[in-house]
Structures are given as C-alpha cells and as structure tokens.
Amino acid sequence: MGWRRGRAVLAGAAALCAVAALPGRSPAATPPDPYAFATGAPRVDGAGGTADAVPLDPGRTYRSSVGGDGAAYYRLRLDATSTAYVSATAVPAPGTRVAFSDGLKVSVQDADGHSCFSGDSGQARFGPTESPRPLTAWASRRIGPGAYSCQTAGTYYVLVERVGEASSSPDDWDLELRYVSEPGLRGPVPTQAPETWDSASPEPVDGTARTRGAGAGFEDARALGRGVWRTDIAPGRTLFYRVPVAWGQQVHATAELASASGGDGFLGSALVMSLYNPARAFVDDAGTGYDGRQKSASLKPLPAVAYENRYAASDRVGGMRFAGWYYLTVHLAEATAGKFGDGPFGLTLRVRVDGTGRTGPAYAGNAAPQGVFEVTEEDLEDASDGTTASGAGDGGTTTADGGDGGDGAAGGSTAMKLVAASGIGTGSLLVLGLVVWTVAARRRTGG
View 1 (cartoon, one colour):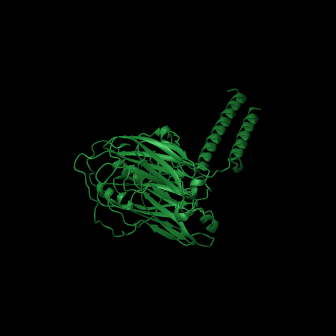
View 2: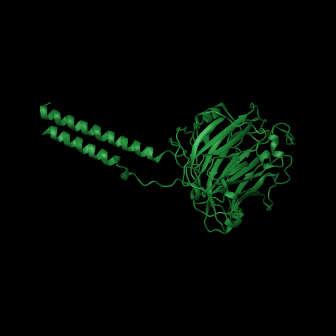
View 3: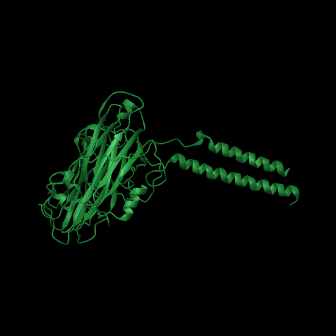
C-alpha cells in the first residue's frame, strides 16, 4: 500500500513537472523597453517657468519628462570655478512618428534669461533615419578663457524643450537628466586648441569576433575594449556600449551591418552610430543606407583626448576634452523591418583605442561624480570582461533585440530565468516525491 502511495506521489510530481515544462504555460513575451533608465534615479518634474524649477545636484541622474506643448525648467546652483554639463536623453514611445527636423534642445541660462555661450551645440535631431530612438542633447556653463558669459556664482536654469514638428505633439517624452561637474585647474589653463593632430584613417581592427551583448541605456552600457565584437540588432532598437579612453589616446569605431536573409528595396539611412563623451555630450556620428547587402559606417578620425580640445570650433574636436568612458550607440531604423523583415540582423563593431595613456591635468577639486574624467586599471578590466556601469558581467550571448543574454543590468534573458525557475520547482517536486516514497516504504517494512 505504501509503495503504491509512493508511486502515486512520484507520478503526480512527474505530471506537475510536465505541466511546468509546457511552453504554453510561459507568460506571453512582451517587447523590450526602448531605453533602460538609471535604476533608482529620482523623478523630478520640469517646471513650466523658472519660479517653480526644482534643483539638480551635481553627479546625479534624474527621471523626468517633457511635453510637446511646453518647456521644462530645472535649477542649478553654480560656483565661479566649476564647469557644469547637463545632458537630457529623450525617449519617445515606440511607433512615434518623427520627422527629420524633430529633436531636442538643451540650454543653460543665467538669472537674466541669457543663454550661457559655451561654443557647444545644444540640439539633437532624429535626422534622415526618421526613426524614434533615445535622443541625447546637452549644454554647459563653462568657466575659463573663451567663455564670454555666465562666469559668476549664482542661480542658473536648465531649459529642455522639443524642436521641429515634434513640439506640437501632445505625447510626453520620458527624459533622463545627467548633471556632471568639472572642477577648475590648479595651474595655468591651456587656451589654444591643437591645430594639427594625427587625422589619418586608422586600419580597422582585424581578428576573430567575440560575442558581446549590449546595454539599452547609458547606465547599463556594455563595456568594450580594443577588438572585434559581435552582436545582433533588431529594427527600431538602440544598443549602448562604453569604451575607456585615457588622456592622450584616440578612439575609433566601425559598425558593420550584415546582409539580410530576404526582402528587397533600399533605405537611404538605416544604421546610425554615435559617439558621446563621459559627460554624455555628443562628439560625432556615422551612418549608412541599406539594400539588403552588408554595409558599414565608420567614425571620422578624432584627435587624442586633451583638455585644450574644448577650445576647438567643431563639436567633434571639442568633445574629446576629457578622459573617461566614451559611449557608442548604434541604432537600426524601424523602417528596416518593412523592407527586410524583423531580423535580428548581425552587427559587428571594430573598436580601436590607440596611443599611450598619460597623466591628466591637475584639477583643483573633485569631479562629480567622482572619477568620471579618469581611466583606471579596473576600468580596463571591465572593458575586457564586458561589465556594465552597474557591475554586471557579460553573459556571452545576445538576444534578438540586441540585449545581453546573461543576467545583469543590461537585461537578462526572460526565457532563461523561466527555465531556471521551472528547474528549481521541478527539482523540489522530485525531492519531495522521493522523501514521501521513502517514508511510505519504511512504514511498509516496519522501519
């Protein structure tokens, strides 16, 4: 009798295991979010005017939003020695219609309503892809030679607004705000941008590609070093990577989109790769059209990282003004799916970091966040291991949307988590069944 009870328990456990393993029992897959916002970032509301503007603290990241029919103001309290950088990443909802000229504008203003001239562009637009994606614009209050206004301590305001036809859309765009503070220098301040530098196009990195998943935002951007890196990307997705670049080093990158397995037609702008500096300030981008055959896009040669680059007239030279983590983003236009299918499409990144790192300028204080303008040995190890900014390592696999297949901030595989959960449940049921069977057998034998 005990044996039959034990066998019944085992049969019931096996049945439960079979039910748990049925694919129809898994939750329906949901499309991934278009952007991974910083975990734990406090939410602040942008004010319609300066009177109600909430303060932002240096070194912090915030969540907010901006509507199509107004502006969003935030408040800064600045000293007379530090340079302030504020970036805003706007995230339109998937499927949002955007035009070439639609975009985002960020400016820093003084208490008299004057924009702080810093020589930097404060606008970002969707451009020829006309594909909704995370879009980052930035502005600064710069201290030092060549800065003609906003040199005193006091209250300043950050204004974030939408531009183009998007400014008349009723839908809000989610925002991620980042405020970075750079201290002044102890010694003499350079005043002249370099007139010459090595501008020859470097040879693309060769070798066997290593699989490396991607992040979905700045905060979970996947670390890369020099090498060839392989992942997948789906139409409408934006992949985020970060590369450590020390003082005196040059960075270069090429993105290669693999051939499609079907479809036909031509897109004039399908893939865009952008480079941002450690303050999330735009440096440069490169793009390519697509006709189903393999295509590539390469950044133009950039100068080595140097403090005095900030005095250059162009963004692409001026952006290379400090060491730290530089961010690479790659976006595949939504329209690619209509001509060549949902993918995913193979993507290869060839990343170079040339030159010997050197000691940076002597700052008179600490940056906020601390260490943002330096590269450490730990950073180089992270680049080798594929660690995210939040500390998650590379899982070594990629998903169809270009995310990382391992656990961590970059977004682990839901399917693998479900398998793990069902495996734990199945094992527990089997152990329980064996225990009951053993007890029943002992009772049957009088043991």
